[in-house]
Image 1: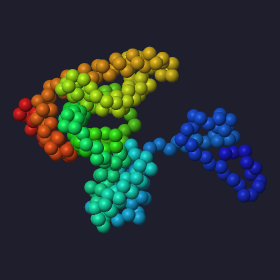
Image 2: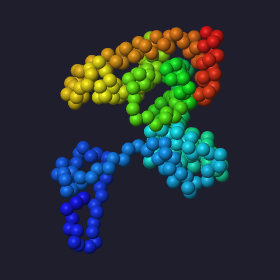
Image 3: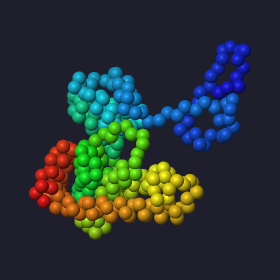
Image 4: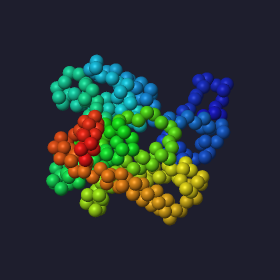
Length: 296
């Protein structure tokens, strides 16, 4: 902050931080005051690795741990979340009376930070089948539009979710094409599409998926990647947003259902395996998918 007398000692430099810059009074931000702004974005892979090393310095890590791989798998994590990963990894190791924090402990910690703690909620047989089909919808859609992207398919309840699909780490990206974002929406809609195919309707389990899909639609609109062209999104009415959401999501839902309907027998054959195993690694899932697709 400028405007301080330079002929007096000690000289004082005032630094402030906020995560709600838009709420600050303009008088604070005009020239001569807090007029130098430095944005602190989420760390990239190099930054995540550095943060992980800082929080690993006082912890007994297994020498086999590859922190660079953990940095890749924690794509999109903030510094606070990365600290939680290391702390939760230590807790998991302690629960197992392990003297060292292993890679499996950090993998569980990433799941915990992303999805929440495991719960002991017991679903009915019908709910487990619906959840299994829902997660298979996400996983099969992901492998069809982006092969090799599934890291894990799990039915174990965690946080508010009764099951989840974890994806392999993305390379840090800053630019996205319409095709890429469309595929992201199709993956998000995969669970609801699978429920519609097998049950003729959806459940409340798709709520977060739809929120994610609508967030991507907003990105498409604000980036000028829709049929609306380049527009000022702030000028759009709620009716306009509803119309563009319905147009894009209905089209991509239809494409997703058509794609997954062609794999209907794969769903049927994989269902028992997913329910029995509860957790399937990405490699095992791809092997199963290839085997079932060949026999279908």
